[in-house]
Length: 222
Image 1 (cartoon, rainbow, N blue to C red):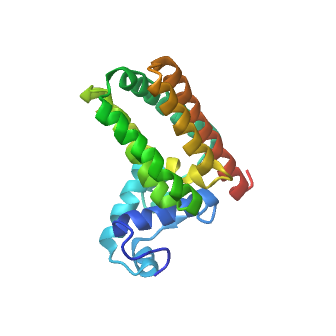
Image 2 (cartoon, rainbow, N blue to C red):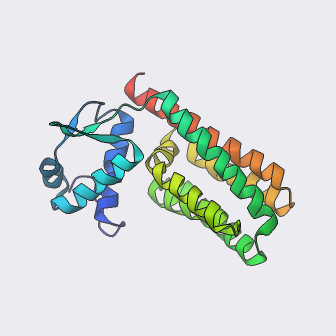
């Protein structure tokens, strides 16, 4: 089966991840129509997980449904990428500022544990496992705001950008820098400096946007 590894999460997620990488790398160029049955045959799957994967890609803006053409790969422009990451950077900055002042010692310990566990994943270059742990790290910060509405909004935006946030980890040494930036954010939290934590989180997200932009340019020739 192409791109599918036994025991590595939901089949639809694996298909989504494989297609995300190909779209970002330009292997699946803008304008290409994606056929459910062809993808099902390629991945050795039924059409159900393929349909779910395409639904997730559409939610992220990587594909769109067009009349008479079906599901088509959309164009990832640098402007669109920066707009999305600029928005999420501000939301994440608000979350970490509030979380700095409100998180419990147990929540802080859990964040530190996630950070420590991510070290071996970076060394191994395991992008998918690091991406999953990275998601847990950010979602733990949302919960630590102890503001349910803010956490819901941050999670909704993160879900919308999940494909892009995963792909940016593949650019150069970005995965190592991502972890280092997490460490800087945690240091500000440990000092009780919510403003510094917010500034570092904002920079963290904008660095991710820049990495994604470079990755797309390197692989598409834009």
